[in-house]
Each structure stands twice: as C-alpha cells, then as structure tokens.
Image (cartoon, rainbow, N blue to C red):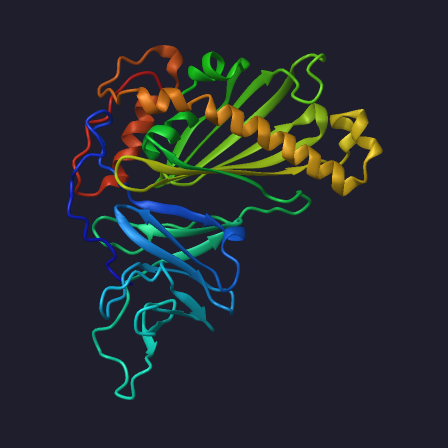
Length: 354
C-alpha cells in the first residue's frame, strides 16, 4: 500500500473560522460511478493534492497523482485511457491502476523510478471512493454494501464547492436541536440513541413533516436510521410507513483545498405501490412512477441540505460549545471525531447533553 500523503501544511487548520485540521482520515467519494464511464479521465483537487481518476476498458476505477513521474506533465490535461492504463500526453508513458509504468514509446524500456503514486480505491453503492490518511496508513475500515434490491435508480446531485468541513456537515446527523428550527420537522424523537463502534456511528430519529407530494394532507411520519462511516460517508435509511415507502439517502463531503468541500448527495427509493404515495401516480407506468417519486424525493432532499448552507459557510466552530439539553449528542460526537485526525492537533471535545 502506497503512502500517498505529503501535505506541506501538516497540522494546518482549514481556516481561522473553523480551526479544524483540514483533512480527516477516512474514505471519501471522488465521483459517482456514472460520472466515470469506461475510457474516461477526470481531474480534481482533493486533500490539497491534484489527482486524476480514470476507468480502464476492463471497468476498474483508479486514482493517481496528477503529475507524471517521468517529467511532470499533468495527466488530467490531455491524458487518455489506453486499454486499462492511463497514457501521459507528454511522452506517452502508460501507467496501470497501481501506478506501475507498463510501457513507453522508447526501445530502452521503462525507467525504474517512473512510478505514479496510486491511491487506494473502492467502488461502493454507486460511488468511487479513495482512502486518505495523513500518516500514510492503509485503509482502517470498509464501507459496507447497501442492498438496492427493489429500489429505483440512484438519483444524484453535486455541489462543487462549499466553504465547510466534513466534521461540520456530518455533525448535522446528531444535532437534534436544529431539525425543527432549520428544517421544519415536528415531533422529533430519538428512537435509538447514539451508538459508536470504532469509525461507525449510528442513531435513529422519528419525525413528522408536511407531505411533499400532497401538502394539503396531514403531516407524514418518518424514521431516519443514520449510519456514519468516518466523516466522508453518511448513509441514512428512511422509512415512511404511511406511504409504504423506503429510501436510501447518502451524503458525501470530500475536502478539496483545505478551505472547502465538494458535496454530493444521492438517494434511491423503494415504493411497492406508487398510488399509496399519490393516487395520480397510478396513471403512470410503474417504472415512470418510481422515477417521478425519486426525482421529487431528491428535490426535497437537496432542498433540506441547502437549508444548511448559509449556516455552514458563516458559522464558527466553537470548542467548547455551550451545549444545552436539547442539542442531542453533539459532545459525544465531537469526542468520536478525534480518532480521524491522527497526530494532527484538534480542539478537545466538549461535553454536554448526550
């Protein structure tokens, strides 16, 4: 496993406003699977590094440092996929998914030092992820596979740049108090309290809200079963019994340059009887009805997330915070977060209501 970080900032903070080390350890989504067809090359800045993603003709996704180790060309600008390799646009050196230079146009063969820095990659639940660790440790946990049986297509949305941090956005999953104030949920209850197991955090909430499909009807009740795997990967299973509806929701905050994140959200819905959601949907073919439900659900989901943007982009990270009883387990969450910073300094976790 390659040691893939040499960040000059070391223990630098993302900004004076947040005061958190910018790049926590964990798995992070660099793109949705659908954004990386076979033969595609993508580039981006993540964890303060310029990276290139590519998918070979065999279907394997790969991530390597952007600059060719031969003479420094940026392989995201003009690089091409040849078979299962990435071809540098400058001299035609080809690198496989592990960063090995497998061919050059020169009869002398491959220089021994021409090896691209490859990053660990997994593809899970419709997304391509890479592992980041400031100390260069190999992956310390796995991302579980979600069962999409019976669900409609994965609906996706991307916000390319948001001035925030993965710990801040993920904190919303335990910030019980903001659910009513910011998002308008009513009768919010804790169905299962916060539990942590290493890098995994889970809790279940129940709440009521105006029916997004038939707003003139009484509010609908839903449960949100939250699973957080590190700070870059959150999965929520939502159940709406009155409509016979279930859905998988995902939130993926990925740090970019130390000041911002790239944020992705996705969901897939499971609806045995679309007419139970709205009688009008009975007029559509089933596949079309499921697609409409998914699109409307994504619209509501992204609206909820965007309600937090002005707060995330302008708040300060207070540590210790003056937590109150109704805040939910914010203090325990912040203590749990400390494991993702390795040797980097991070403010001591606050206590408070749990």
